[in-house]
Length: 282
Image (cartoon, rainbow, N blue to C red; front, side):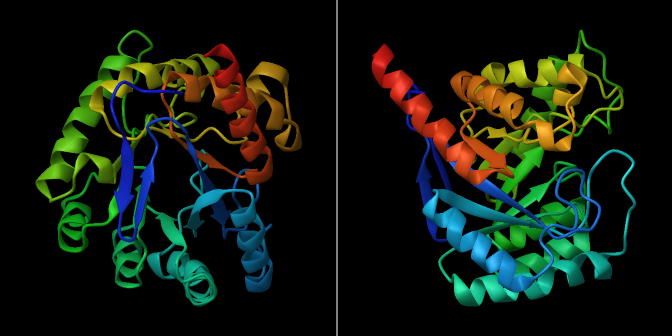
């Protein structure tokens, strides 16, 4: 997992050295309809206990989401999305004031409310594709995750990597023009986000992790429990952990450093096992 040059992910009150080792980024879906864990996090006390437990397993960032982004998701109003998140955010900030928090949203109004409430990281599945979002980045200077959303492009297998490279070149430039540094910007190849919705596209995006290292920016591994495992093994939502972990290890070896997951304990075991394996090789 070593790199030829230092790499950090930085933001308000955090600085993670990810040159060698990845960090764990925990998903806290607060929606009734998410593809894997919709309706699971149903109470504030439950979520607070989960965060407390996952901190002991090494989670560094906790991401709140108030709207599903699964294929053909049902869109909701900005008010409904924010009202799902706000009470949890307040409770988490009171109980864990030093926690590094993110929000998963592509809604202008929700992003603004999150920034006003002290959220440090904005994860936008649409890659900050509106001037309003860019203006908010310029005003608040959050750290960000910019994702290549293949649903917004007419993808072809032969040109997909070039399309992704062009997209991230443009997205990073626009974010840097708003005052962010490269180490504030995480890039996510968007596995599972495609109009084609095929294993071929998912594998191309996973392999592209190596090519995306050219940007010298943190790369997110966001494949937890996704449907590539269904297409490989006809695996249901509760049967996707092993292929998820194996492909996460593969993408880590290629240069991914921020592992966005539902299963924090098992991911910690993956990271420790991988570190041991690297020590044996060296």
